[in-house]
Image (cartoon, rainbow, N blue to C red; front, side):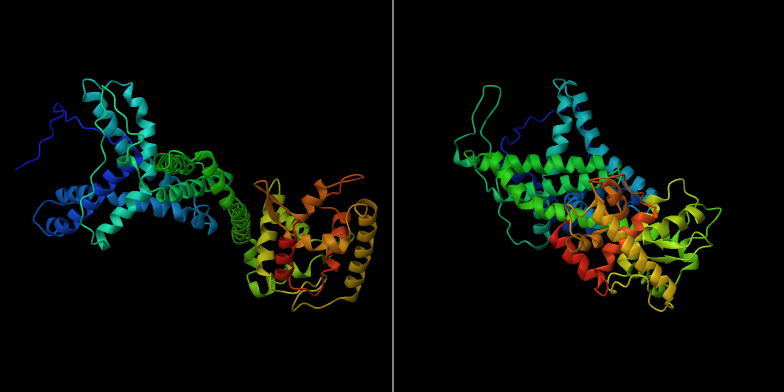
Length: 465
């Protein structure tokens, strides 16, 4: 026997009009397909068939495995983004985007070809193609459970697809018990849809636009199928209230997790700046000279401090200011601030468990003249703070917020210095790289001396900005 495809032979059928029926149909096909693969695929692969035939058998029999793989891709997207796996290599993102695009083209071509060969098809029906793709993606959770049940399940009952005889002469499914379904799967799908929407926002904020269309497709698919599941299972339930309630439960935790992921991404970016020079012709990076992390990790806790330079440039500097000066000198970037902010975040993360000790670094000698210069900076900073900020803020209340920087705010990396430069309730703005800025920071940090950075950071996050 040989299989022959006859495109002119049309087989009419009734598609399920309720989403529970469509899910039931796809679950039955998925489970049966994988059960068939478990039974026949070992024989096919060990036979004398050609390698091409074996490949086709594998692809055809395991087709429904794509659904659990889609769910895995969705669930791992945020952890991969948090770990920096998507941001480390542009080539990897482009490769993944191309693979996703090719995988999406195949089913679309099948549907377009069907409209072309069917005499009553016409291209107008091809306009429904996007909705078909959305529904197909949205079934991934339900179909994945069916695929897994083929491996471990023992239930071999045949579950019929509910049909209502709806055709050109009309028909109705509403109000019939046969049309019902359980709503709980819809709640999971709505949750996945919100998770995908959050992921889409994250990849867009990181500039990963090649991945964005697929995350938007997942978002539309899961939200559509989830909403239809609730509407068809409970026609009297106001869908809007269900969506709002679910969003209200998930949104606060999602917002905090988004902030943590963006902060982690900033640290990873800082590590890249620290270990790699942006100029291949001048490969010397920060880590080339400062390769011992045991010494480097104490830098954050020791700033602000006197940065020795040829006279008359010796002055008190913050860690960001020192990093910006070094980046501008060695990397020769037109704007040193973004790289310096990321490096500061990286160094802050390295020394998070060390006590704050302005003017002193572990293992380094202490110079009394520099400590006196730092004390003078603290006094100058107190005067500037009193003139500009004391009408609204008290130093003991503001100081803990210092340790929440650098941070990501409104999708933009923000240092303490740039925040203070933008926050000017009165008087002229401070220069983020200037001496007055270092004095104000020294005044605020002086009240935190001796306290572990990590503990103060956590307290500051709980108390708010």
